[in-house]
Image 1 (tube, protein in one colour):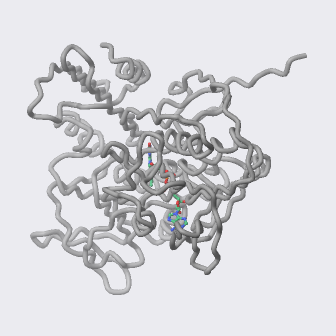
Image 2 (image 1 turned 120 degrees about the horizontal axis):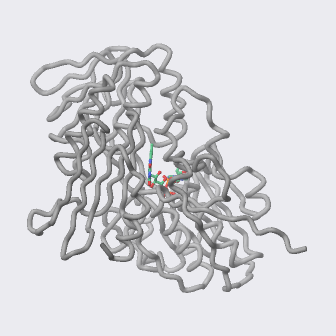
Image 3 (image 1 turned 60 degrees about the vertical axis):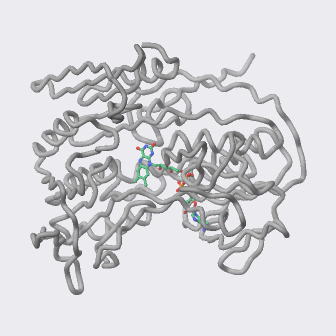
Length: 433
Ligand SMILES: Cc1cc2nc3c(=O)[nH]c(=O)nc-3n(C[C@H](O)[C@H](O)[C@H](O)COP(=O)(O)OP(=O)(O)OC[C@H]3O[C@@H](n4cnc5c(N)ncnc54)[C@H](O)[C@@H]3O)c2cc1C
């Protein structure tokens, strides 16, 4: 009897592909209403070699690349390296419902057996310091040198920490790694007031998690609107009203001058002298790509490591993908992009010729007892004529804005009811209205 082939679904929010039947997406935590059936194309390309593939970084891009290599090359050695002390995990979940809990194992992308089966060796707690392109070796902080035939550079990004005096204090955290959440968790029992610096999506997610953990929370936003890169002004106002209802304070045009306190954080001083009391500060001010190792090795870099459609850097044999890579001048630094770039990098490194298909830059936010979805161009270019359709329902707490250009949907914002997300993504991908 033919073995039943497991049905797969794809999460519309983060692009993760997994078996049907999961109650929530294992990567980003959204429910089945965001899943769509998925069929994996059979991989025809095969090239079994004795080569050594080193994958620097074990995030979404690294794992996706490792899997793509193994699907095409059954005999090569695959070594995935990270400076963290943990197997690959879902980074997006860090600001989604894991604060105050010990979720180390729950966050793993795959069980250890998955890597054993695929013969992917994970080296954890190992920091890469240099790439010697002449000898084709990666040099680590413990002096060990590992030889490679192909190197996939997937070192991701780091939180940007503005040079605010006091940012080095023990109760200041920027959330990038599991260890950052573990630090927050250790601070929670003795914290009552938190300040979040940055009113973007990750700052708001963190603010909501801190609020749910029982802290009083103030969000400081340098600009005059929340999520200003993705939302139109009206949506920003709408979101603000939902946040205020939850008892979270928001201050706009708030320029932080100092994080105050001697032994411990006591508050955040703003320009103008106002001090917001705090015993914990979360900084969420964007990310910077980890491109220095590639740059020092001679690769061309801009905001990140420059790659072509095959994820090749300007150094032969070195591919880059994920948050640390920039394609056509764009570095979205989102999970679905890291997955797709990783797939393309892995496939091309084995010798297949695969082109990276750019992903639609969309954003979702689940918190404050609402959901939010924004995609494409929501009227951000003052030079362009947009046709706009807005539906707002104060009682249902929903807001929907559709931006059209030349008769085509160019961007959309949904707050409170994101059920049309799949339809919108489909329309935008196909270029239809
Ligand atoms: C809190 C949070 C929430 C997020 N939420 C969302 C979301 O909802 N939706 C979304 O699309 N995206 C989200 N993102 C972004 C998403 O997580 C990233 O785009 C994605 O993780 C990038 O994957 P990557 O593999 O390129 O890099 P990373 O996941 O950063 O992996 C890079 C790896 O390289 C390792 N590394 C770095 N330097 C070295 C070195 N010198 N030596 C050895 N190892 C090294 C790092 O430790 C890390 O393990 C979120 C990010 C964060 C931090």
